[in-house]
Image (cartoon, rainbow, N blue to C red):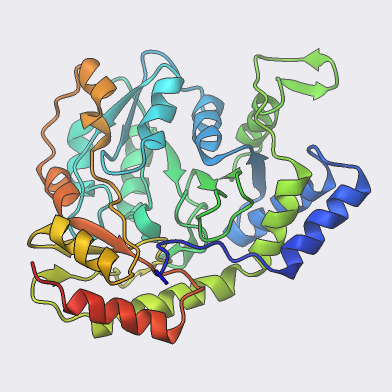
Length: 359
């Protein structure tokens, strides 16, 4: 039987939580959503958390809440899931892509300053694969230029940078999609220190309404249900256990994988990497690695094979930025299972299969 690249862990706690909501009759945004928001805010050490329908909605609404729209620019990474760039386009603003660091796969902070123009309104760092970006340098640059920070923390719940939780540095966006480190099936969360931003987010997700049938601004229907929130609450209680197991699994694989053409992931000393993905760099024939690992029953995936600005419709918009590190990275990365459902035998099988690769 193959070892899956991702596997949601759903137990009796989640089942009981869903049944409780079903029996209550309160299925739409209600007390469970509020409870999840309170618990999530506490976990991220911020006063406000606003639940929304998915991670893309979180990014979109966070940008809108900061007043970002047509004519504005937002600096971000080219090496991420498409929602990172698309959420900026959805507001009418323009994403500006900066190259990445080869070790962490995150934004290269040394290149950020040169990308700032008079139209720049925000920086959107992505804590890719669960490794936080270099937030001290990003914060300093944002403060110097009066820019907002929108953290794309979709893959980084439970991560930290210099002791501060991911999600506490700016307005931050999380995904609760089924394959994330904790999940609600589908869902998102925005965290913020700002009461003003939080109030805008609550209006934006709910048709611009504080009071039923009274609408103060243009808003959207991007709410979370109590069914999803109930699952998220049960998962949030397990976050630390899940995270500890992910880190332990990654530590085991780092120690056991000894292939001369493979570089295992690194973690900077001042961060807590939560390993949403365990991503190798392969100096050799990656296609051969994919075939051999699949034949050995080891799930694997490429996150991400195409840079955001190299997607067809971005090309049609005129994007042709040279991003040599990110471009090389798309040719070398390969992710392996690291989720907390792995057994010791699974981990040994993964390491053995990697070490046996003929590249």
